[in-house]
Length: 543
Ligand code: DGJ
Picture 1 (cartoon, protein in one colour):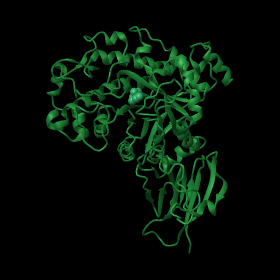
Picture 2: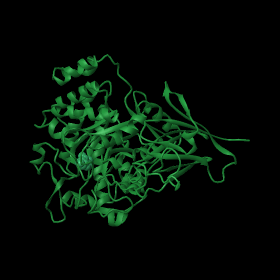
Picture 3: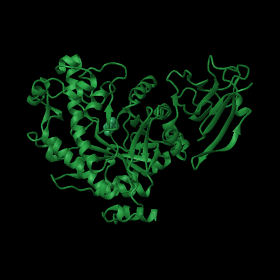
Picture 4: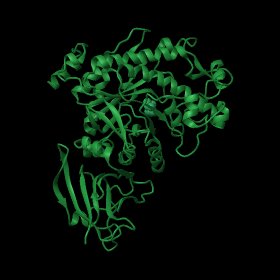
């Protein structure tokens, strides 16, 4: 049946009648994000779901190119595809909507057993208007561009364009209506509203309307959320222009998301073209208006219909990546990584992401369309590159429901090999858990009498692990290219030992051991290599 549907879909023979009329599935509970005790779960079909995702290249969003995606996702063990739906492709003529691409996408995703996250490329795509329809691009009277300080047009549409908002919102609502009518089974689990909003070089619209609004006091909702008062300049000082553009971009996106949610309330989010991780960004050097880490509170106040703001990570420096993950993983902001570079070095950051409770992770550009965004990502998608992402995904693939369920209700932690190769560690209750790199499975690299060769990945940016603390003394462990040690934390009760290291899997939500690791397998720590193994560790104290 599955293959039959796929055949029909690829031959273009499926009718565009509502899919729920063709599928036997009864309507399922809507995807949603739940939060409790500072932790989050993406609920899909009524249960926590870990999005093992991949994003397609930008121009793969046409029926003839979708076939380039699925083999890569299968090879990666990905369960979710993130892919654009562009305003220009669904409303090429004003008021005439064509969702045939979306229907083909739904059909093919179902045939390949993948979920979808739709990326709405509307008013903003990478801080530009490239994905708006021609009739928008060509009418700057109705759809004004942001003005520079000297009154010139900038290559971004203004966040104050009322008609732009109305037109974008109408198209977005049409898309959500299409999903309501053709996706009862919720193949689409989330929607990204716009793509990397903001403006580079010109921090806000200096046109008449922008200037008029900028002279006003900051809106009460923003004052309440931030505790700030007065005009934009009084409240935000050197960041005033940027705070202003952030607010008006957020409320613009809010209007679109809210209208879409009134049709079908799927989880929705925005993604950030990131600023440097630790500084207060230069307002002219950052995508002013976007949801960077230092303006999340403005976005939260302005766009309450969005479940989360998310980082697009292309800066591969390990310390910076960890800072980004820490800044977006908040009690009021579920961590999701909708884009990360697809070079091999980025794969290891899957572990610190899920260790911070990430509900999803997606390297960018995972298809065979022949396009590569090097130097942000890989030069080419060879088996080694895909394999780096496939290994952790395969590890989690069959247990992703269990991981997501347990991570929602228990402490988690994860880390990746730092750029300098130093070891990493954390304390969870009575136990110190550490990871070191470049060790063989047996013995110590420091054994000079054997003078062992370096491991194949000793000098490579490979390796990481993540744990869930199932109970005070029990941990679920996944990782690759790492030696993990569990030991008593300083100051913890005496006589702490690792009692059991079980390799196993989950069946119907219950842990099933397949073997115990002991002897060589534990004498030198737990050595996780290139196999998709899942371990359950039990620590204890002897009398
Ligand atoms: C981030 C954007 O969100 C993506 O659409 C894409 O343009 C990448 N940058 C770079 O290829």
